[in-house]
Image (cartoon, helix red, strand yellow):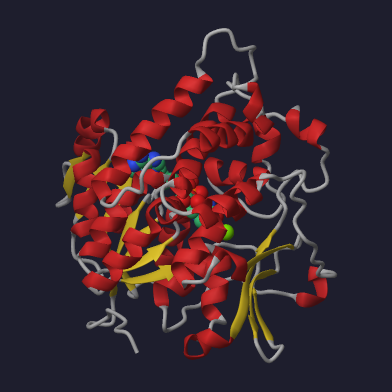
Length: 406
Ligand code: NAD
Ligand code: MG
């Protein structure tokens, strides 16, 4: 049984990405369990006001903000408190390195790779929500976790669900693991309707309240593609053994199918408080107030296969995983650039996947072997994607790409 990290009965927590959707839900759980958690360090991207307010309430020893230009304001806002304040990439990495029983990795995007790795390399127990580093650098993270004695606890609801019904002692008796997908806001939309949608429509997820990037990923179903790659690294199964089922009610979050025909499913309300609470307390459990599943009112539960024709992102992610090497990184990096461009109104919804297809067809980079090489490749692919988006002469709202690839 792994150590719970609670020598004095109090779990010291660091929250990376404390001002985001997962970060704020984590802090709400800490608030609901006074005396159980003590906050050690908090970080944010650029929202210094919200970070300062959280620090004033939670009294961590250390806070860090990525945007260095906000350091004077943050420092000023906390000047009357005994809290160390830092900024920039090194500040966030330092927050991840500070002693804490559990580090919640909840930064969005590959930006979370450095700090997640810093926590892993000090042998921490890391509750990992931030899926993009696992997609781009999963092998390195898993190898480093084994080398440094770190424990990774899945927070992503499907992975957390599978973790809860996964019999490790019977892992060779598992036929497949199954991730469910809500299908997002466009589950029943035609391609033409999706092509014309606005960021506001794509952000309006029917079941989950989440940050902007993952909401768009859910609408394209790239989120499920990223999650297949995430599951491959977290559970050590090949792509063929990781299934996806569309389940619009989002009551069943993950399933494990065993060789004797048994299928163990995990159910919970559509609320990230549940998987986060599980990862904060594991192997114990803590109460989540008002979080109770009522199967009578949940209505009929339905399951269907994903529609690969209308949602090509999942297939793209599966082929990147099968090809291996640097391709999952390329997929993730271009997706990050394309989602931001869509949110900025620079490209249409269907251009997100089109841009990823184009870059995947063009770029065959060598597999990066270290954290530095991964970060360099991410920067290089980001530049390629941005150049494609910025090609002169493209019509507004469309991506200019070689016709062969479109
Ligand atoms: P969010 O956008 O709401 O929050 C992101 C956090 O990261 C914020 O605190 C922000 O300030 C910080 N941040 C942004 N850019 C940064 C940078 N360059 N450097 C340092 N910090 C930065 O995102 P979210 O929805 O909370 O998602 C966080 C991660 O968890 C994502 O990887 C997402 O895929 C994953 N996840 C989220 C949910 C959910 O319900 N929101 C569910 C499963 C998995
Ligand atoms: Mg998920």
